[in-house]
Image (cartoon, rainbow, N blue to C red; front, side, top):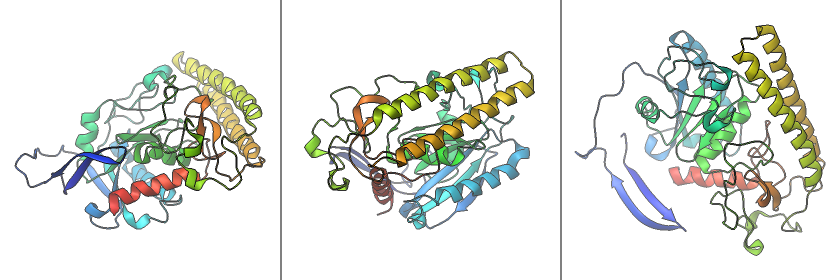
Length: 361
């Protein structure tokens, strides 16, 4: 430990337990740090005790790829501070790169029949979802990250395939070299840092009925709307917008569900080709087709949502948290709803600001 930390368990804004942990105490374990780890100070704003310290842990970079790692760290730091509210609060962040070389480049892709020896053992197909990218090797992650002070953890996976994941107060993952790299980097951090829920509901996910009916979700950006008059983001709602807010949902669902069916088929085709050792040119052709369709659909979705009379309004729009019915999101679109280079909705942005201030004020 590098500093004193105050841990709180809070339910309904009431502190149930608190304890100050003193790094000088004899009860603190002082094992030697694991060897062979390099630290890169990407952004330094001040002493850790008054900053949000973010460790970006490299995964799937070999010793020969250190140059790429450094370039990726600079690239993603620029992405991070391009988005509000991080841009306006840049002086509250320290960013570190933490690098333990992996024997092989990349990560595991079980459904593609590909496995790599890496520092953290990150793998696609986590929890049965082809795009979900996690590691279960928490000890290695913590041993490597221990070389820097940190409040939040990224795992930066050296891979071109679209994938990532984010778990609140644990870590988030993202891949570096696909067309959606900015979205992945920022979207997944929204989960792990500020407890933001996924607002999408048409894509296949690893968990069904994640939010039980009749229970208000804990996340700040979705609601079951059990008490419409006490909407959790009531102070941000737009004047004159009805709650719940009727939007062009049926047309959106038809459009997006059709694409998700195609997406699932083409992903399964790519996986089958790779497992069977198909010609590299054939695999590349199908992958390029997949990327093209993904971009075209994202553009179509953006145009559809922007054409709505509710564009830019804050209300309660049905469809959120993997559920087409019964859960609501604050705005038509948001970084937590659809892919693309776009802002947080007003509710998500406010939640991120609160989290930043919790660490720094």
